[in-house]
Length: 92
Image (cartoon, rainbow, N blue to C red):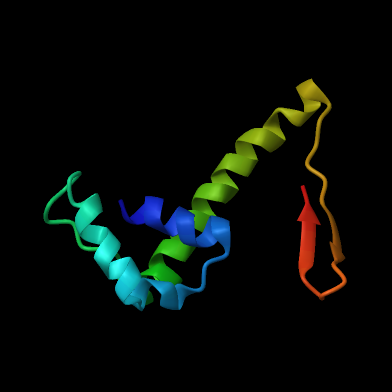
């Protein structure tokens, strides 16, 4: 459950302090149908341990993808620019 919540934060660019909000805390009992005793990760765990774990998971996944490049002749490319309101935009 912690990793699923971490993916939500990291994948959507949510600030870590959202996990401290009352709205987030009110949402968790609904999730509790899966595990009534589940407690969400702390702010500290989200920004340290889970961030490192998710980064390592992504690196492992990329290693698998990279191994296929010789066979598929594909690669990952990234292009980035900034919008008119200085929002960074990435295309992967």
